[in-house]
Amino acid sequence: MDFVGKPTSTTHSAIAMATDVDLASINVLLEQAAEGLKMLEQEYAESVRLLKPTPAFRVGTLNHLVQHRAILDYLANSLLEFCTRAPEKVYFPIAKPGMAASMFQQLVEKRWLPGLPTARPDVFEVLESVQGYRPGNAWITAFVNMTNSNKHVRLSLMAIAGCNAKVIQLPWGVGLQVGDRGLESVDLHGTIVFIGPQGQRLEIRGPDVIDRNTISLANADPEISVARMTWQEFKFDEFPHQPAIVFLRAVNTEVKRIVDRLVPLLSVS
Image (tube, one colour):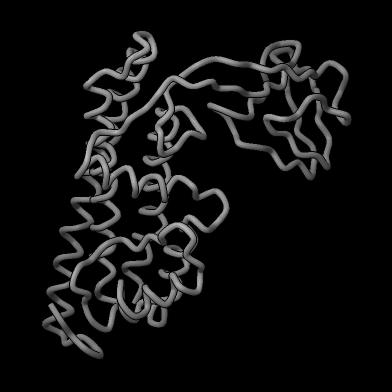
């Protein structure tokens, strides 16, 4: 498929049919990925118990990554109707490490999805917002590297590593955790209010930043304390920032979020 300028009605119809098929496939893949993640949770727990990744967890990781990469690439094919011509190969555009936003836009405009940023800036805005050079998107770079290496080189390596977190403790239990298996940080400009089982009310007041380095809370009610937790879990060599299963959950969550943002835009002419 190679067209220049405005697509003809025949070409546009063919792309629309392909889009329908791709979106149906995306829904099936999302459902299968959700089921596969349940199995991964079980195999990960067994891996931690044995202190050795089970073969089922390693192979399940491969399948999990490949399914989510396929979802993104099906989405990219669904965007061809907004392009001035079809590229030789269609992939969901992902910036390489160190690539600037301007270079990413140029590559999408000229090579990866030609004409898309100009024709559909709203669609391009979604694509651009999930790139690794944007804060909070470190997962996508590791995701691409891991998918390629798992498919073509070897299954992902992982090792037992130390995990740590800070927990905000309340008289009736833990109220908040930052660090591994929790939020990365909380940038607090207002007030966090905790309501206890008997209607008790405790507050942490900002401005403040709570992260794994927090030792104490100067603007919190005295009943609130900070404690450090340490334990061990597996972490992928390519993404040592979080336990392996947390990374795989993040892939599932973030890819679904991309689908939920892009699909409603596909019907907007």
